[in-house]
Length: 336
Ligand code: 5AD
Ligand code: SF4
Image 1 (cartoon, rainbow, N blue to C red):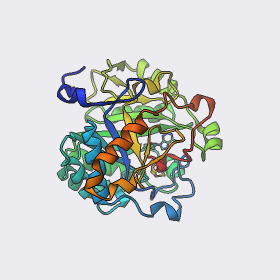
Image 2: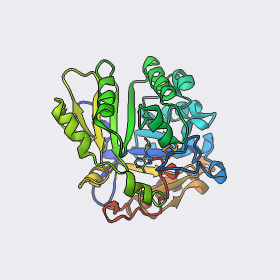
Image 3: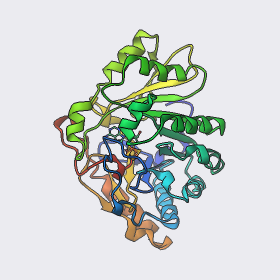
């Protein structure tokens, strides 16, 4: 374990049947999104998607119960979490929950320019901003309409506001060529950005697009290796990214491939949908409703027990290699 390992709380960590220690909650704040990414919500989010997300009091109870189970890291996702007006308030409430040490947010960056300082003041520890292309035409084709400059401005605002960790997520799509990869890498030379190239994952709704547009991670790995980047040692607290560093760059680069063998072996997370259903696997079939036990502080023990029982059934692995993605129609439902 690295020096940052939370050894003091290790004995409390929840383990699944395979001995994987779970400490990381990903909570979707809404299924709504203001983008229409081709691989996610090409038609935009459905009208019903915004209905009835967890309220702030429900989120407080949920996160308290997870903290009771030893969860110390929470990421807020969507959909697009910043379409909620109370996003900074939620960050603060999660951050103030005893036991929670890190609160992250995953966003498309569209409102980040205006929100970065408030998020930082609310105690946000890290932010992941999706930006699949720096080329205006390609970016528009991926997102439906957006301009990359606006997202870049949001990322710069996050750095200027000193949100401690700023990451850029780039989904690997055919057409991402070497000059563009090099532009992303160049961005990390002077600023401590972390760029993560993510292999496209197949979901129920994107099968045709996936077959056409998937770009394998090897393409980026080869560019990194040819340019003097080297793979960093992994610690057991690491997420799924294989990270690379370069002596002349302040930032880091990561590659995330859900199709890699062993991807699920280090899984440390659980997910809760915006309507309060627990999903033990991103590509699983099972949803365990929690909302009925989020209505009163008196149900804290029942909530903890329900999570514990579900964890015993956490699948060993997704079956993406076989083209099976469970009931996951798109990642906006579960926050990627
Ligand atoms: N495959 C890979 N990444 C995806 N994302 C959304 N859908 C997919 C998919 N099918 C990414 C978003 C964002 C992160 C939360 O997940 O672009 O960066
Ligand atoms: Fe919205 Fe993210 Fe899905 Fe794009 S990938 S449509 S930004 S939820």
